[in-house]
Image (cartoon, rainbow, N blue to C red; front, side, top):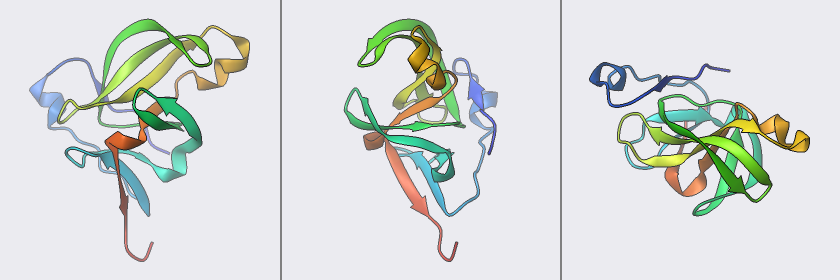
Length: 126
């Protein structure tokens, strides 16, 4: 596993500190190829984002968090923050800050990355 690397806002110093992940399958930003998460951290591929299919991940790196807001999603009301690439500012998905329904608590602290914004890098011989 790896830790969350986030920045709040457009601080140039944060933009130059990029985490590079190791592993056979790494998901990166579809626009600039900055590493975001690993296939080892997929919890579920059966989520829906704003633009179609989305994946729930246990962790993510190189993202900037938006403002916290309550948002009504398919599974009820949640407090979420949008996720943007810390390098190119592409909107990638969101993170769950709080789930108001007991059955949804497992999502807290987890990351939704929309499939259409991801690029899968597969390393040779891994």
